[in-house]
Each structure stands twice: as structure tokens, then as C-alpha cells.
Amino acid sequence: MSARGPSRRTRNMRRTCLVFHSTPGLARTEDKLSRALDYEALRTSDLARLCAPLRQEHERSTIMSSLSEIAGDERTARMVLSMLVEPDDAVTGRLLATVGGVETLRLAESDSPVPGLNEVDAHVWRGHFATSGIDALDDRLLQTRQTGLGVLMPGDDEWPRSLGDLGERAPYVLWTRGASSFLARPVADLVTLTGARASTSYGEHVTGTLASDLAAAERIIVAGGAYGIEGAAHRAALATGGDTIAVLANGVDRAYPAGHSELLGRIADVGLLVSEVAPGATPTRHRFLAHARLMAALSAATVVVEAGARSGSMKVAHDAHQLGRAVGAVPGPVTSATSVGPHRLLVSGEARLVADSTDLEQMIDQATGSRGSVAARSQPARRTSREARSVVEM
Image (cartoon, rainbow, N blue to C red; front, side):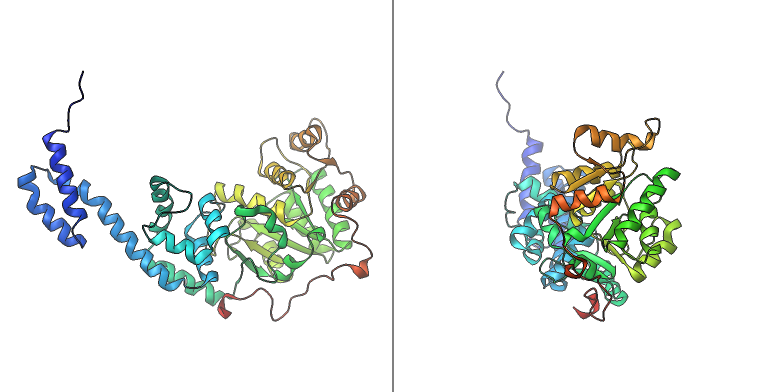
């Protein structure tokens, strides 16, 4: 059966497409198409369908041209990207690593080929930038400048060198609230404690003991600010007078979970809140999964105290293992659902058994080398007038 050529209707629609693609200006295009309706025998619905892509392109171009004006430097460009694009986006991460933030935005606003992408994939990626009006984005940038929150980018003195191990998966920027100088400490000084939100009294007791001992040894406790194990880790560090960092999956200006608003406020006062998503952002499943890699990369070691078989804490452990970090797991009762995760890590060989702080210190020292005497270590970071490069100063 021979293939039939395009129908008269299809040919007419193609000619009409050529008309509006060759006509400058959206209004003139729609007017010309309207006059062509009778000749081309097209319905009004056909006109709307044909004009929709052009209208979207027109709106996107308007937004993009304005973006270029407000994001002319690398720091602002990366801030804009953190507001428009979800964290751990493969295309954005690759472009940032190769051409930088300003050029990434230029590629987003232009019709130039995007390195490594075909035309369809480039169109999908550019869709990230057509979701917000320029006025709303400009207002959001202004609000961040007024809050005085910190924003760090690669190359800053306080940018964590350990995030370099993430390669193209590194965050676009880090938004900070508090002692951002904690991030400049050697990776061997940072330990991540994570675990189940629905923790047991046993798990919280072990967490408190580990966190207190680590704080006494001048380690910085990294956790995610969540209920359960992570909240216990933060509280123990603060109670001991130690340093702690909460890595959030939402903006650092938001208290999440709400029940930890007081705890997170204390951490902001004497420790550090850090996030890769912009102020005002709310937590989502994707953002929770994405921030697991930051918790893993920031520290020399990750310890899972309690966790289910499929949980965010297990993802932190898997990410840490893939990065070559030390991973520890606390054993628990075989009858406890919250000990299934740690037991699986031990059986698989991804984690070493951690029963007390001595086990943990030995694990860290073997992975990173001994830190030497206390006098030779980095002194605990203190808040200064130059703390957390303020957005206001940019």
C-alpha cells in the first residue's frame, strides 16, 4: 500500500504556520492568521492551537530578556537559577560546571544550541525559565537582599571544599543563616548524624551520647533538622555547647518542621542553617531526596542511628558511601522496625558498626587520618562581622 501525501487541510495548516513564523510580533501574526482563516478553511480552534506555541515563546522571551538584565554577575545568576530550577538538575549542573551561571542564563534565553542537548531536550530544559514573571522574581531578589541572609558560591572562602566531590551535582549556591564559617572547617571536623523521624527512646539516647561526645571533641554535628534522631542530635550538640549545622530542604527563612521552630531558631543564633533552595521555598519530596547528597558530602562520616529499610536516612548513607565517605550504623533490637536500615547497611558492608563514640572516632581517623592534637586543629568557628557573605553587600 503506497503512502498517501499530506491532505489539503494539512498542507493549508503548514502554509499558515509559515505565515506566523515569518511575521514579527505576536499581534500582527494573529491578525494575519485571522485574515487567512477563510482562505485556509481553518477553525478558530486551529488558530488557537497554532498561536499557542508562539505566545508561549513570546512570553518566555520577554522573561528571559529581563533576566539577563537583573542577573549580570555570576552570584546573582546562580541565585536566580536556585529560584527557578529545582536542585540537582542534571543539565543545569553540567552547564554551571562548564560555562558558569551567566552563560547558563544566556543559553536559557536564546535559541542557540545547548551543548550536549538535542532540540527537544533543550526546549524541555528552557521550560524551567517560563514559570515565573520577571516582576515576581525581581521582588524576590529584593526581599533576599533585605533579609541579610548569606549566599555562598564556588570560589568563596567559606564555600565547602568537600562539595567539589559532587562534581556537576554540586549546589548552584548555598543560602545560609548563621555561622557560615563552619563550612570552611576541614571535612574531618564534620560528622553527619541521621535517622528515623519516628525514633525510639533507645535511638535518641544513643544519638544524644554520640553527639555530646563528638561536640566535646570539637566536631561539628550535621543533621537535617527533622523530628526524631536528627532533632536529638542538634539538641545534644547545643546542650554541650558544641557546634551544629542543619541542612534544610526548604528556605532557611522557614521553620520546617513547624514543631522545631524554636530549635531551628537556636541553631540560627549559635550554629548554622544552610540550604541549596532559595528563601521562601517549601520542602518537597524531590528537595528532600536532593538534600541528602549535601548531608553526605559535607561530612567526613555519616552515622545512621535508626532508619527504616526505605528512608531518606538510608539515601544519605548510600550517597556518602558512593562519595567514598565513612559510613557507620548503630545496631539495635532485631525486633525493631527502626533498626532494619542500620542492620542492612552492616550486612551489605556499606557501614561499619558504631556502638559508641570510640568506634566512630576510629572510623573517622582511619578514613581521613588523625587530626592530631586539639591545639593543631581548626579552632571552633565564631560568628564575626564578616560572617556569611550578606546578599545586601553584593
